[in-house]
Length: 96
Image (cartoon, rainbow, N blue to C red; front, side, top):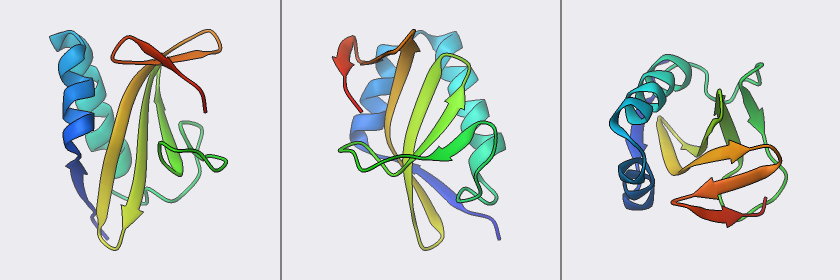
């Protein structure tokens, strides 16, 4: 089954904060990794503990995409950058 990927307004703002080449890396990773079986755990996809961002995380190098699945839609809720053990979304540190 093919899933439709949608970005929330916050996720669009998160992407807009990043440089164009970073946006391309992230969007290509989303297309290739989340269109089919987004709820299957893999090396780059994993379920998260309860948190305010999303129940799932996609790892794309230092970038993190936080998402949830609703019926046939993958909803991207946030996009951030991981530096060591710290997560930054639009330049602000967030705790998971």
